[in-house]
Structure formats: structure tokens, C-alpha cells
Image 1 (cartoon, helix red, strand yellow):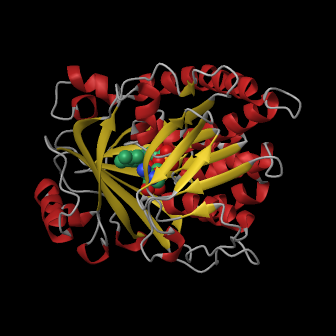
Image 2: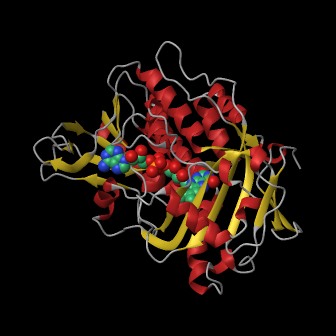
Amino acid sequence: MHIIIIGAGVAGCSSFLFLRKYLGSERHTIRLFESHANSLDTQNAIGGGISLAPNGVRTLSLLAEGIAQRVISSGFECSYAEVRSGSKGTKLGRVSMGSRARYGWPNLLVHRATVHETLLAEALAQDANKGGIQFCQKVASIELAEETGRLQVTFEDGMMETADLVIGADGVHSKVRDLVTDQKVKPQYQGITGCGGLVDLSVVAPHLQEANGWFGVAPCGVRQERITANAEKPTEPAESGKNEAMWWSVYTSPDIPPSDNPQSVIKAQLVSRFGDYEGAVGEEGIGRVRLLPRFTMSFLDKWHKVFKTDEAAVPHACVVLVGDAAHIQPPESGQGVSFAMEDSAALAMLLQHYVKEDDNAMDSLQRALTSYTELRKPRVEAIIRESSIASRQQEGKGRLGALGHGLDHVAVLQDCSGVAE
Ligand SMILES: Cc1cc2nc3c(=O)[nH]c(=O)nc-3n(C[C@H](O)[C@H](O)[C@H](O)COP(=O)(O)OP(=O)(O)OC[C@H]3O[C@@H](n4cnc5c(N)ncnc54)[C@H](O)[C@@H]3O)c2cc1C
């Protein structure tokens, strides 16, 4: 079977690795295409800090215990968060984040780049320069080639590839999703934008001043040297580094902020929203601020599509979605990265289970994808329902709906402890 994965984010890299592990690369070709350059070769790490839930760390361990340990050693174990008022630092409550004691694996506060680059470096090391992973290749279209029954993937530079199975790991604005839903489901901007970054822990003051909106700070592990990838000496992050805090904030904005907003403008807006925010994060240490407009999306009927040709004898090709392409998690769920990896693991295991050597491969493929949708959709959608602020925002009283209700004009310090509850 020829498998093409589109997008080398967390979902795409983990799909590449899980497919190699569970399906094997002798009988199947597994290739990964990414529109951007290799992020391991660039200076800028993509994304800020994230919360990686115990189920995400456990999923990493299914790839290899060493991969999970590499990420754990770069993160900050955080079993609960304390919410405090910014003005006086009074404790308002405590939220459980999941502990080792309960789940066997920790909840981690860690750079998104650490998780992504660990997976990407491992994928590159396993590929060993055999051309299975290609960067700067943006998919322009995917069509069924009637005569072969295969999918034809065309890239913006004109290159073409054929596949029996295309895995859409192409994120929130997925092109592959358009095929699955016949363009009927599109992500909607929520009118809320996240804003955040990383600072040296030493510049974070013990409390925040009164502010308008939501503002959080949490330790985020140790900044590692960039992970390097080469086949001979893969994926050992250097030990040197310094402690960092991740900070984030959420604000309402009726339109999506322009992606090319200069940093000076973004920082000035941050100051105007939070007034004395320097009490939390000193100007000199604030570094690059990242904006993340938040999207929501209605649930898809299914996460895969089978392409049938008129010729019964010709096999049927399929597409399937993983990660943000299939579902958009509210950031509060802390499950975006974890669910992307769980999707990849489940898909690879089901393909291993159904696609046997002597079978009609295409029938088996359809059974595997149907089971994948049936297994993953209810779990993911239940968590989205529970944690979604989108629906609550409709009926919310404050400018930020449920999130802002009771928090408007209150700054929040999230204080975490690595000690298990
Ligand atoms: C504000 C915010 C906070 C969050 N906090 C958390 C958190 O605390 N914990 C957590 O687990 N998750 C969090 N998330 C979610 C998490 O970042 C995502 O769910 C996760 O990264 C999904 O990964 P993905 O691989 O599906 O998509 P992406 O990371 O978007 O990767 C998609 C890849 O596909 C590539 N691509 C797109 N189109 C094409 C094309 N046509 N051709 C080739 N390549 C293409 C892109 O360049 C990209 O590399 C947060 C998200 C937001 C917005």
C-alpha cells in the first residue's frame, strides 16, 4: 500500500512513526510531505508552551519509552493549577491537571516545539535520508485517478504522487478535510485570540496586577538546545538550558488579528489591556509574543472517505483525517497535542489489525478506517463538549463568556507544583 501523510506537525510526524512501527515499511511505502521548511533547520521554534496531558505522554511511550522520557525530562511536571486573584494573590481555587499517582504518567508543561521536534527528529532519523520525508512541498489538490483507482496528489510546484491512502494531518485549515466533507465543514473564528510566549522564570513576579481579561503564567521546564536530527546521532537534547515560564492571555477581537502585526504593536496592545502587566512579565524578558486566533468547528459525520470508481474491479482509495484536521480542541482541554498523537496511534494499530498480507487490501483498509472513526470520534467529541467554551460563550454573560465571567478585571496567576498531590 502507498500511504501519503500531508503535514509534518505533531499529528503527521506521529502518524509517520506509528505507521512504521505497527504497519512496517517493508510491504508499504509511507511518505510525509510538509509545506514549510524543516523547522529543525530554522532558528525559530514554532509555538509556545503547552500542557501535555498524561494520556499524551503515555501515547509517546507507545512509540518508545526513550521518546517519552526525552520529553518528560524537558518539561515541568504539573499535577494541579492554582487560580489566584491578581491584585492580592488570594487563592480562588485549585484545578487538578492529572498526576502520575493517578494515571501512571505525568501532566507536563512543556514547549510545543520540544514535543514536535522530538517526533520530527525521530522521524528523520528513521527515514535516514531515504526521501520519505519532504519539506517545502505544499499540496495543491488531491483527485481520484479513475483509471487506476488511486489518489493523485498534486503539489504546488507541479510534482505528482499517487497513493492508496492519504492521511490528512494538515491542521485547522485542512485541504484533505474538504475532500472528506465535500467542503461542507469549515472552521469558524471564535472572536477570541490567544496571546502568549516564553520568558525567563526569573522575570516573573509573584503576583499580577489588576488586569482586564485572563492572564496566566506557569513554569515550563528547561529550555533545551535545539534538537538535531541526523541518522547517525539522533534526538539527544543537550542538558544545558535555563528555566522558563510560559505565559498566555486571551482577549476578544471581532476580527482575526493580521498575522504580520509587528511585535511592537502586539506588545503595545498587551500593555493597554493589562496595564501594569510588567509586574508579571518584565518588558526586557518578554521576548517574542505569539498570537493564536481561536477556531471552532462542527463535528464531522466521519473522519474518512472511500473513493469508489465506476469499474468494480479497480480498488478503492481512501483519505482519513488525524489531529486538528479532524477535530479542533479548545485549548482549555489541554488535549490538542495528546489527541493528535492518540489518533495516529489508533489509526496505525487498526491498520495493522485489519490489513493482512493475503487479504483484499482495499476491503481491509475500509474496515480499518470505519473502526477508526467509530473508536475515536465519541472519545474526542465528548471531551470537546465538556471543555468547549464556544457554546458557553454564546450564552455567556461577560465579554469572554464563561471564561471571562467572574474573571473580567481579575488577573490570574497559575501556580504549579511538580509534587504529586
Ligand atoms: C491558543 C492555543 C493553545 C493550545 N494549547 C494546547 C495545550 O495546552 N495542550 C495541547 O495538547 N494542545 C494545545 N493546543 C492545540 C495544539 O497546538 C494542536 O491541537 C496540535 O498542535 C495539532 O497538531 P496537528 O499536527 O494536527 O496540526 P498542526 O500543528 O497545525 O500541523 C499541520 C501541519 O500541516 C502542514 N500543512 C498544512 N497544509 C498543508 C498542505 N496543503 N501541504 C503540506 N503541508 C500542509 C502545516 O504546515 C503544519 O506543519 C493549543 C492550541 C491553541 C490555538
